Length: 155
Image 1 (cartoon, one colour):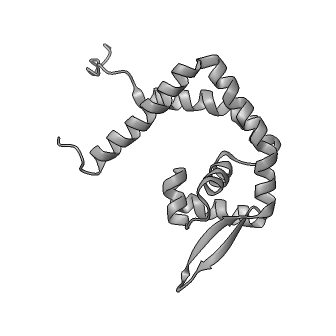
Image 2 (image 1 turned 180 degrees about the vertical axis):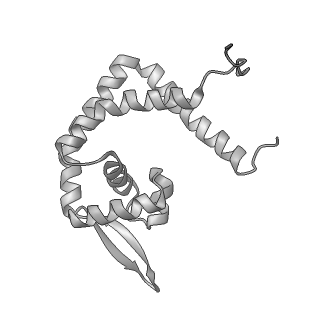
């Protein structure tokens, strides 16, 4: 039997490359999070709330790239661990605002030096110029492709 004809895809596999890059970066942070009993998703939520303040779950979904069904379970576990508080939104008892507790803020203060040190290590390996260029390229990719998906770019 002969092999099926090759599919003519001339571009490199960008989604796979981005996954490999993500894993190369996250593998440097994962031991810190594991040592403090946090998952990557829990840390994403804590970091977003540290930077932006209390948010509603639908906003956290967008900020942290976590699906709504997954977020419900994660927030429930975080509440059980005393890492977040849920407060009803004034005027609409069906909505809640998620905020950090003193416990999670204290945890973030303990982790922050290790996180910052890891960022410094990554920058030392990649170089400041490359690191800054990577941030700019990723920001531009997200912005431009987001516009394309939302009808901002013509086909």
